[in-house]
Image (cartoon, rainbow, N blue to C red; front, side, top):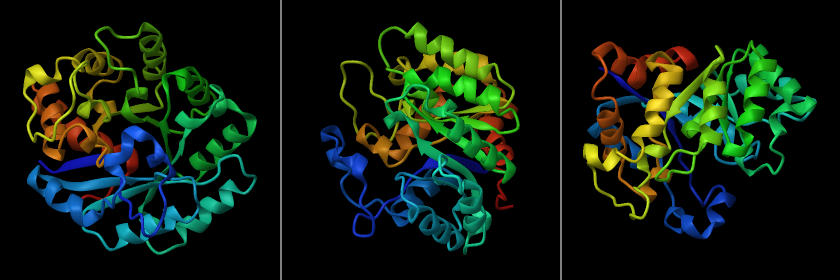
Length: 294
């Protein structure tokens, strides 16, 4: 089975600063992570295609990612960034499509998790920008904090023509008990027909009270703490609306690329072959309209 990693990043700090890395706990990520670093890691796990996702809110990053995709046999799609609140969002999307590699643009993302306003996604200007994303035939990746989830529900209801892809299950706080406030908003999001979620982000989370490691394998008992979140997602979305994503290199804070993949395999071990194929390939291919290698 061809495997799609539906969520990863790359950055070269000599080309572009990554302000989010200024957080003290992200110090190990303050170095270059290039596509050439990812390629052998992905190949070792049988990953044949990926989706490259934006990291900064600067117009220059997305053209760079599109050009990288155009010269790569691994990247099948790019989730970029435009200013959704700007009146010219539709024109910006059209301009990206005209660039070298523009055909690889499959979605747009904005880091909502840094927005103080929990209702940022339902600002009138943002809703107008989301409508422009839908009109361009693209998806919208939602990366947020749990406080933004109810706003995401409202935005998805208000823009039914747009597919919303929830990154990292909405970044719940992984603890000994599931936060019911997160769970309620998450289930409401999952209940909408135009929503999809990524089995990403939480895959590298160490158990509460334990530090992460760079181990390449994750035994079933090492994923017990994230299983309740996965089971809520599986019940809400089903395999046909879940997709695997490594969140590399952010995930390397806790576990190696192989460990993230092993965690996903452990969580999905009881699914049928068709259900596994959905999570590890088909959902991403359909959602992002990816052209995969034969």
